[in-house]
Length: 120
Image (tube, rainbow, N blue to C red; front, side, top):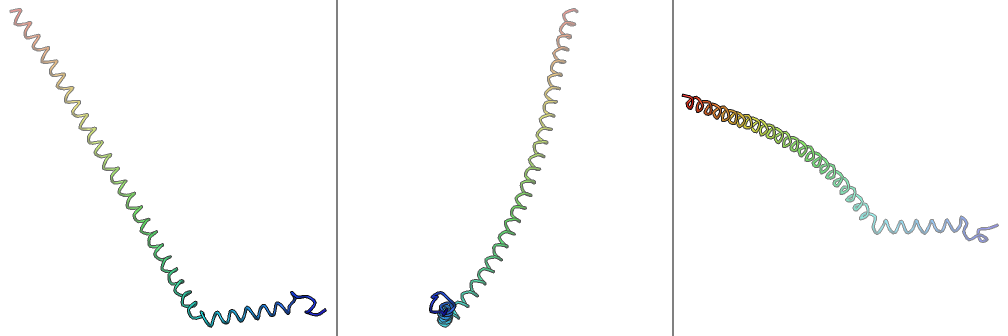
């Protein structure tokens, strides 16, 4: 058996490889230096983009941390103010209760004084 009997044998593969090799050689002659320059630029851009992505991710994390701290500070401040308001309200209620008790006692004393005057 010869290569002529089987069209897809090594002889044709060899011819295909030679054609592909020639095409690759022509492509490299025409675009070789430009392709290498483009690949180099793309790698540089890729590296730059990855660095900037990392920097942005770091900034996002820093902002996230700052926001959490700010929220905690605001929450603490609000809790302190609420506690102060509660204390003021409690103090005011106690003062109002005292005033009411004093008014009742004053009323009782006036009634007692009036009854003493009437008895005399």
